[in-house]
Length: 124
Image (cartoon, rainbow, N blue to C red; front, top):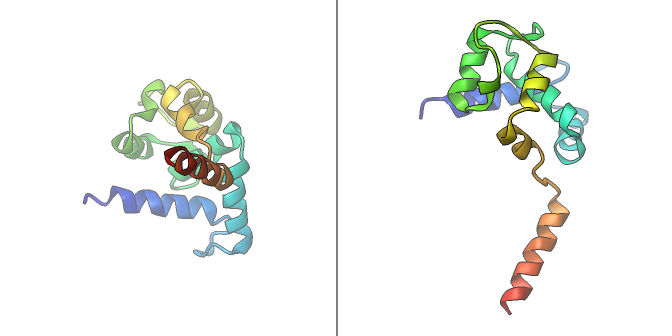
């Protein structure tokens, strides 16, 4: 209701739109899927930084940080009164158990399908 979800979706779109043409072409789409399904923690954190660095200046500034804190609790590990670099973001995020858990979720659809089949067969 407050518009936060649409703003987050817009930030995600911007992070996936590598060439800035306001469309996600096939290669950008494939790169996004590759990041989600096969990306390691470091790549996912670097992409997350791009989502929150709205102006693309290489820092998450106070206003950008405030938007992150409003959406979740994840930046309790950061100093709030300065700009955060990509490296600081990655290092701080690696210390947050909630972030690590979210980024390590198994996004492999094949394993999800197998899990569903196992659950169904266990009920019979």
